[in-house]
Length: 124
Image (cartoon, rainbow, N blue to C red):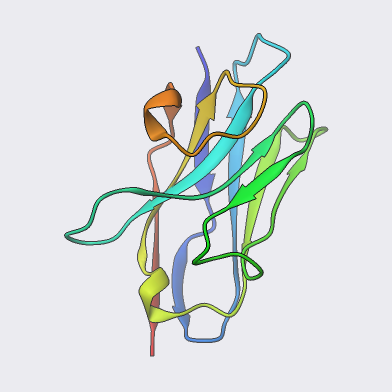
């Protein structure tokens, strides 16, 4: 069973940086992708960024493109979301999720395992 554990959330001020980590375990397939999603209070959960473990292709939401690079460390089985130039509108619970797709997909229904989430709060 795939398990994902997020860490690295917290409080930040506008313009600050935070790095989220997603530790992945229990994967038995060779091709998969990891996505980051977020859900702000009163809003739908939305795709933020994703990375293919196999091809390293990445996709970003327009709202974070250029600010939130995603990366992976194969040795540590960990995916990182480096959050730079944070804005108050980035405040949300951030989740990482696992998909069996080879290439990154933004449709959250294609992600079959989810972490518990980590809160990110950005003040102005």
